[in-house]
Image (cartoon, rainbow, N blue to C red):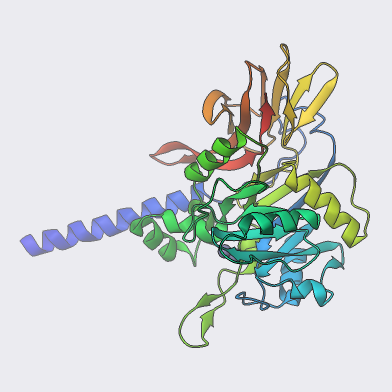
Length: 397
Ligand SMILES: [Zn+2]
Ligand SMILES: [Zn+2]
């Protein structure tokens, strides 16, 4: 009798766990892109500049990735990217082999992930092969990347191989999200649940594994209080999990990763169709912080904007300005469902609204950034805010 009761109890627990997981994954599923009319009093002008959506940090068979450039290009085209930045480990060979360029509308740029004494560093837009020369060579490496017209970004700064030198000068930014590292901070139960539901509800499972990058945000704002720092969202896609010997699992797919985290870039001018010119346009915009990070798995965010108006001037993300009384911050985040916009000043929440738009007068100097959360309703658990967009900063001095 006692044994039967235990069995029934165990079965009930398993059933509850499955039902709860199922409801959670449903609550994590993608939202459709907003249609016109869905937006609640959103601004008709989502901000000036030309916008491009892309993925940064992808590995191919030139280093430890599982797919060829052709596989990656196909995945990029199938997922509707404007640009894609390949960053194989310690090599710029795909660039020398002529892979940088337009592939039927998709701009493939070739950067490099450089192994340094302080961690992995992405070199984007560097025209030549770079490497760190000796243990004291990090500043020289960063300078060399900058001299070639490139930018340097700390990869997975809080991941398994964290970035360790935050005093180094001249580094342009850091990865706020890295899809390859994001799941590693999740608990055993969360990962077990993800494995169980992966075959049935893959969209919800991948979204559920990404949380607000608290530590990376803290490191970013700390540095941004002294100098401009750009942040990006990276996929770090490999489509390859090593097993034993030469065996590997082709997972997660490039398509999956390209639909999970994206960086939207707001460029000064429209792209021209000339890959080298367009590389310079995009890299310049990314380097100055004119971009934002989107958890694309929830919903695309082509019309998000975060701007500061000061008299007749409107400044976007990445700007640094001197404080002027009467200047205003304006956030617009169109979505087909409920969202919460939260504005931060020096990493501390300043104001939030459960609408698609937020206006506030700038209260004084500070590093301002905004985060948009999707409010996801789950049966019995109520509404949970899930991170969707993280802006770059506007620095008011
Ligand atoms: Zn790395
Ligand atoms: Zn990598």
